[in-house]
Image 1 (cartoon, rainbow, N blue to C red):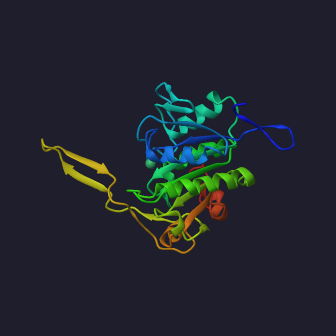
Image 2: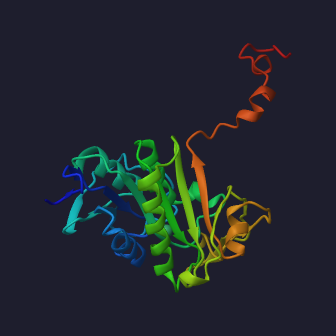
Image 3: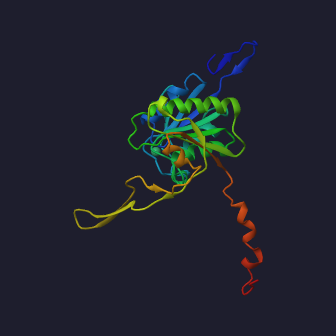
Length: 269
Ligand SMILES: [Mg+2]
């Protein structure tokens, strides 16, 4: 009966198969809380990196072999990126197409331009590319104290998406305030805001006088704009941003006048 349940009409229905991944590594608290929260919605299969893979974006491992180690039933560790995990699970290992991909719970915000660096978002993005409804879930605190709240929200989002799906070529990027669940101020559907990355590169000297640089540091600032993911978090709302596969800026295509980009030398119109 594993993987199936008997519904009231007497017809055997496949239980939803939910693929869970993250970028903080399979031993991170967030993925355990998420998998537990999703446990009774369907069959949960975890494929996650063996180590910290935050900010690896949508990278895929092309130049080394990938090993998969099963830690316990349903929990599989991959020595690759979140994208590797989803790609391997869906295209090679699961045996059937998942009904849902959930990536997280990330330790820290994935707001605004963060999504382009985020391995958490990339895990869900890969699910979207493979035609599976996909959600990324992040706790916005870099020192979370209430990650169980994000787990509850992740479960609610999973229930919603299993029932309603998501529009084609769209994934949901969910950010959750780090507070008790009953202190959340509801849900806001938002657009991507803009980060203002400054002072995040540190220049130091090692003990032998050699200079080194370290990217990363304090949480970057952001531009204050209404309707954004940042604005929702400011007022303790869960931010749900639909991200689209098509990154084309359609509205400016007509400004790029093709003859002016002529490949023939000397032609300027
Ligand atoms: Mg991370």
